[in-house]
Image (cartoon, rainbow over all chains, first blue to last red; front, side):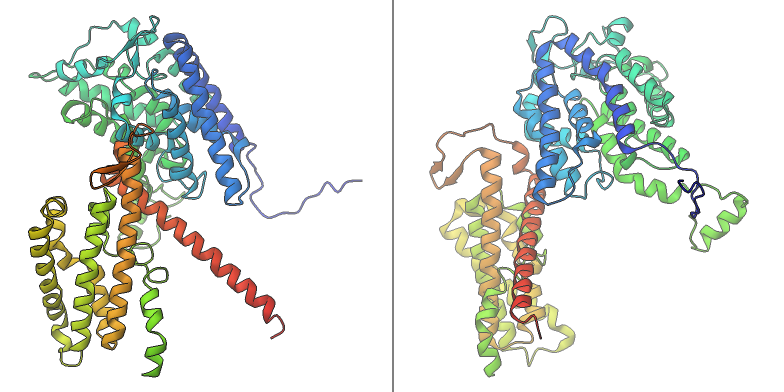
Length: 329
Length: 219
């Protein structure tokens, strides 16, 4: 008979969660947004999404085989990177753009630094920043009209919103995503379904999107209207641009966000402030990409200074230890 | 003396792999990133550095026994600044187009830490002839590095590589990535090349070690 008595050292309580399970949850949460993108912008979007995901998975496999590491494409992390990148691209981009972008994200940003868990910024966002710097015209002009599927090269509604503080779009149009914009960022309803699913499943911490969108809304309410304070349209500021997809799906990346609950709130607030500054006073129409990349870089500092209190220690004791330069973790 | 003659060849060659200024020592980064937007810029920058480096190494080495230790850095700078002015004036006179592009980076060779590094770490302790070989070797390796980085950035950033008025291929085969001509493109190219060289060196060393293990396995 099998020996039922196990004698091991702690920990005795083991989580049943796996990397694969969490990543699969994120993929599931992104599917509504992807479907919304295809419905709004047509089958071209599907091509962009498939090209991006295929390139991400292929790059990961090729790189890991080339350097003789274990091939980990079945953990879905490459799928997420490809999917996230595709959702942040204009729907009418040439198909080679997501292919190059995903390969850059996986090889240069993720694998070269050691693979999953060792990348210092979010791979999909870094790739988006690279593509924006490499082919700026494609990345800022290849829009499609929702449901009409005709190409437009005009600026997105966010540009007008940033300069005038108001938008011609109704709340319903914004909520359902009937506007110019990146493939997966426009349909707030779909993003909200995915985001709430992740929060309910306890995959992401609500503090990051809350801090991010809250800061953005309050900041826009205060400063968003030119020439007047406290009259900006904070609600539209959250719904326009990439703030929603960024705060729920990109800023919450485990590898590049703080580990403590308080630190996560600070990260959300920081990203919100930077997005606000870039939108209102910066040279780019949208600041979500750079805001989250910047906060990714600051994450180690946040983790260093936001230290949870030990059980059994008072705040005074913690402060004393910190001042003495001792180990506070 | 005999020993130094034996290592003359090594003093020349070591700059290319073992002490490659750009990819191993990571010095002289400012011109490496700033002027490598094309092959031809990299070439002329490299040639200037070869001349300055050989000149300063020879003079530092020749006078190494009379330069007081306490003020050696200012003295080195004089030996570096002199050839830099020569290069600058020559370039202005005979290659004004190149000078317009390289601009401030030619006078800035004075503070290129590759040159002061070779003076401090090598020429100040070694005979003249070794220092000359070291200067030529390091300088030529630097030139090759700049040209390789320049070639990659120019090809990806403009879609073609230009030699004077001739460009190859005549029509870009793909839509060029503007980012490669900007500083981030320089850093990405540099990082990738640095990694590749380190991988290659590690592979060769491993194979050498394995080879010697088989040969002298019983020792």
